[in-house]
Image (tube, rainbow, N blue to C red; front, side, top):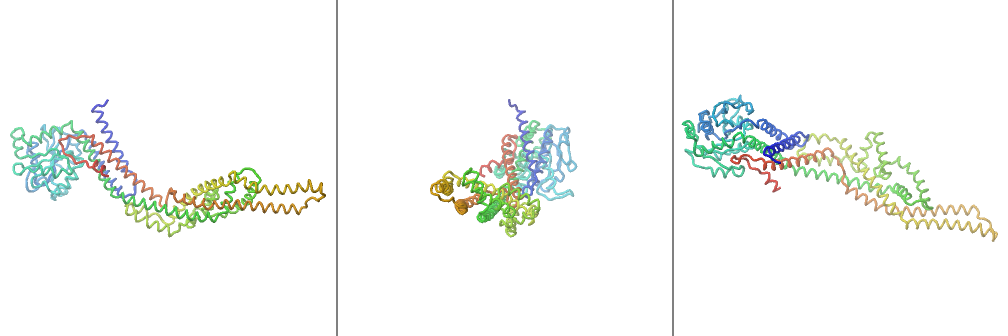
Length: 606
């Protein structure tokens, strides 16, 4: 069962969860300059969020904001009912900020720089739930030794909860004030007031239209502060627009509204910081995509080079193919006369293969020697020669210094365009680049070995079907049967009934010789059959190796940084969407103005 208190706790928990996600995002290590900038920005935003959460229960800080001579100080005097702040319509009269608070208010909870502020305390009901801060003007450059008015204003604004934006018929279009308001509005509610009602025309409609693009302004007030001050001093109940303004301040900023307002301000702050971060990162997404494409193209080029060299070496290393195929065929063939011949042939080839194994230096030859043997040989080679031979093998596979340097130059331009830190890429010396290329080749070797094993098994099954076995067994068996019948006929018939002598050793020598020749012919025919399917198998194998994406390229650390940048960009986008949804749940008093929410519109158009 939901209660208002539980709903409020859920909203606060949601805010805390997003804040913790933002903190983790800010602390993530990266070499991507746009993200480093956004991390610094969000850290400042989170610092303000922490300050707001710390003073959840403290009275609201209502600050005046407006250009020179707009009547900010006069409005403050009218609200308090006492002439506290000096007012004037020409020169800026508020040089040092003025804080007006109730006598019971604990000012330390507000976290204001009290040493830079003149403080006045009054025991008036108006100041029970909020304090009023009369700020310097943003459109003057006067200095009193502690910085300009604008500097002092910017130091105070992060501590403010509600801005009383005051303007006049002459000042409401000021670009300087409008620009500063854009920066100050994030994390604040606003109340727009046109002063000098005794002298100026009512420009609220035009002002509201001017603000409508960036702000939600439910109501504006047109007041005569001097007349309102006289009413207050004469203990006359405020009337007209000023009375409505005072009523909004006392009711809309009461103790019951503090958490709602500050909670909404926190969400606005998070949304503003995340929105700006997304804007900055999205501006570099195209550069990241281009870098990703060029790295992918480098992997494709690398794969094509190695696959082409693999094809050349496989086609020239047909002896290794035949021995591997014969071994696989014998496993599928089973025990038979012709398979015995194949085993003898393979045994002789095995002796030669053992010698070839020690001479194998190319990647294709290692692949043909088998996944396990090739890997063991590669591991042993690395241990014995400590990587020197690995660097030499790179050039044998088409990855020479010129190709590696060309790839480095091409990629470095895209790295600069994407604004990764140059130190990260500059650390790659040619030796390190060769070492990375050797690791790529090693992975390619293992993949090629697995593909070779699969291709050999497929060819062995294809060449050891029942029809093939019957054909070669019959051909081989015909000669064997002929010899046996000839010997048997001579022994059992000619020698017994016709008086013919037994066959001499010359016959057996000739029969043995022809057996070897006949067996050799059949084996040659069979190996020719294997070799005939070998070329198409190699071409199919190479095409598969080209299509297969390499797990890593020549620049693995750069690829990792790129993937992290993409993931973290998506993470900050998701946080912005979550904050946008949270803003719809966190409702501040509808009478207060606020900066518009552009996230929903942007997400619909993107």
